Length: 105
Length: 311
Image (cartoon, rainbow over all chains, first blue to last red; front, side):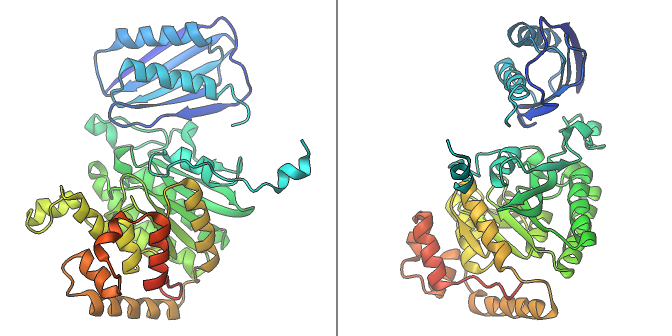
């Protein structure tokens, strides 16, 4: 197992008021992403525990992409990864960022 | 729109497949909208203390979601296993969450409990803790039933309900199962590995389903209800089972013993599910596996009506 952590400054605070959201399942080729609204408005953190070691650069790129596209200010993402491909990771991160902004669910 | 009109529309889970859904998706559509309140949710990060020893990824909820909700405006306690994480298998934390839920129901003498099973059995990486959890859960479940709590089990996930999970299911007040659902002590691969392919060919999917699958379990009396494939079907079944299941008593146990003795006597010599269905009076047993849910439910009601006086 490898653990990674990334901190970014976001352009703006994520919309909505939900405290947390979770999406995905930890299984082979998949991952779970839990997102919590617990940081100062413009900070963003992504903590990763992955069974696939040695892909730090790739994770860094996927996380930077998340920050650029969704501006998840104030959000902390925690990931348990079962060896998902980068496209699956991007999808789950986007789903998590969207879920926590939806107030009705 | 008019508010009164909205309130009179019964909320219906859309036609989402139970089999395809994750545990959290099932829960979301199974209970009355917005009523689920989770205990020890993922933010508590109560994860397995053992998986990291094996270099295996953990899950924030350890594959078990427990909490309270409303079903048809009635309070229920509810547990759902995530069959895709570690095959839904019972480990220390996973099991303790269900034990705690059932003990809570026992101590407070309610409300009723619904368990959404999806499990291959005990997690091999934490087998001692998992086996202990199974024993603790069965005890807590029976103690809850003894004080009048009904515990209903629902089976239709991709991991089925095997090993210790099937023992817990057998301890429930009543069960509902779908076509894809399977119940067994040992799974197909385990039987083949231990007893040889002549005893049981795990690659023969038709054999697997007519031995452990939902239709056979319903006809054999192992599950009270057979249900269609959607979350709404399971919701309807749970409401029906909660209404019909009996409280645990000496009379119910004696009726269960008699039911099992009669089953052994009638079907003990059958070598295949097909023989059992024939003995039950099905005119065309070979057509049963291909039957649509509605037709099968009708057939099952005709040749084997569910019993609520036993278990």
